[in-house]
Length: 389
Image (cartoon, rainbow, N blue to C red; front, side):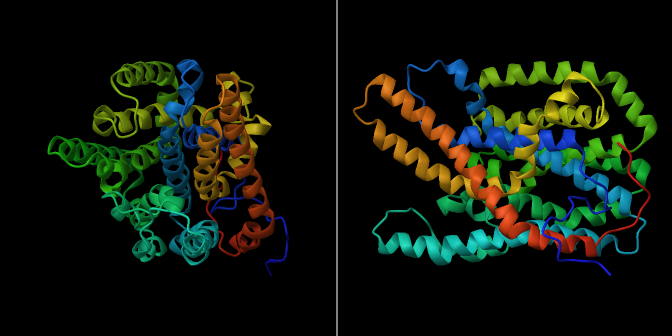
């Protein structure tokens, strides 16, 4: 009998395996990039640009999440494909991780937040008619064309993941193991090509940024890394070429960033997203391959701070954006007429406080709400052969 009353459910994947600390660290890097991007506000002109560069490209934290998610989920699907509860285990555990907090956030936004804001006379450019789109995880198909609800606008990226994972388990199940890496590469290439072609045809930049068909290249690239990592021969070859591949991808990405750094700049919607995904794929593979080792990368990724942000990254993701809207707005008002020193202090305070508040809310959410549902995941564990990093 599974005891579901435990207040502290162990963190495991669909196979019952514990998380890899280094990958928790990668997840921490991803959420910190997103936080820096959304809390950056308006940089005081006297603050050197070099100091805020991680903020400028922080939007790419979403791409790192996509790659890491594609890697983790595909690896799990490969390991559980022989189990009798393949689909049940995956979808039940996925639902228990994602839906309780997500649906609560959507409810709070549309049923409490927006009505209260309207009664208080607050001006929020939100389209309440989009509520069904958020309940059904297809909000990105509306927000990509200008219809939006700012407090939950960031859920476009989660919508892409959920749509992708609606079909990806079937793809992995039907694909022979030796061909999975090729299928992942083909999906990634088709997505990147479709985005490039649509951009050349004049598609809106925001559509290229948010529509599912144009953004699954990163998820598929993560799947490619998983297919390579679980095959001993492919893994050895990838390990031997990792340094060269990493240096080449970083060099090409750096050259691309010179041409345009914005999330919806032409160079990013053209090839930038894919180049970021490839560079981040190298990081994910290196972190997985070095798990438990004393190497520089592994020890840095096992940092308690990165792992803490990684552990609570989902709650931070869900709640940080409305916090950022308030924090950036207050900082902008407080900076009006302030001296350069005071304005800089306000800016730094808004960034630091915003990140701390987001982390605090996620910590409370995890302990008072999320883990009550996560305890049920133990009732839906597939039983494949053990996974070894």
